[in-house]
Image 1: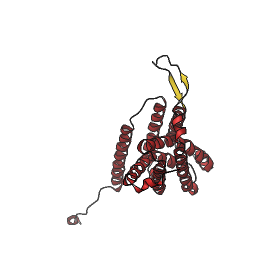
Image 2: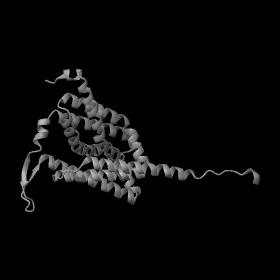
Image 3: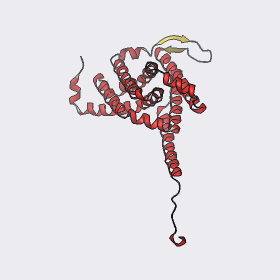
Image 4: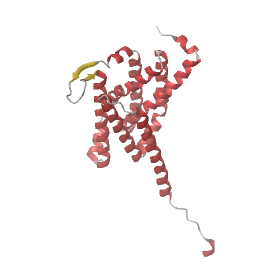
Length: 257
C-alpha cells in the first residue's frame, strides 16, 4: 500500500530532514502551550502531563496524515454568509470553524493566564490550581493539538508527496521535542518574564488563526521573526538582570589598610 522503496533514494532523506526541521519549528508553539497548561498540575504529574500531551499531538498528526483526503475536504464551504460589504459571498468551511474556535480558545486561555499572573495568586487560587485534574488539562491540550495539527499537516503535504516520509518526519520531530520539552518547560516556568512573553506569543498565534479563519492570510515569517527577536531581547535582559544582582566587584586597596 505504501512505497518503502522511496527511502533508498538520497532525495527522500533530504526531504525527511527538511520536513523534520519544519515540524519542530511549527511545534514550538505547541510545546509552549503544553508547558504553560501542564504547569497548572501538581509538580508530581507535570512530566507525565507533558508526555501525554506530546504523544497525543503525535497521534493526531499521524491520524490526519492517513486521512489527507478528509483534510482536503475540510476546505470546501459548508455554508455561505452573504456579507453585503463583500464583493463575493463568504464561504465558511470546516477548516475555518476549527481555526476560529482554536484561535479564540488560545486567545482566551492566554489572556486569563496573564490576568492570573498580574493579579497574583491567593490561597484559594493556589488550592484551585492543585485541584485541577490531569484529565481537564489533557482536554485543553487535545483542543489545541487539533488546531496546531493543521499547520503541521498542510506543511507536510506541501513539501512531500509520500505519506510514509511525512509520518517519519512527524515521529522524528516529536521525539526531539519530547526529549527537550522538560527543559523548555522548566526554563519558561522559572523565568516569569519569559512566561509572560510566551503567553503574548500565544495570543498573537491565536489572532493569526482567527485571521486565517476569516480568509486573511498572515505571513508567518514576519510573525516568527518578531517572536524570535523579542525572545532574543528578553534573553539579553535576563543576562543583564543577573549581572545587576551579582553587583559590582569591590576591590580592596591595600595602601589604606
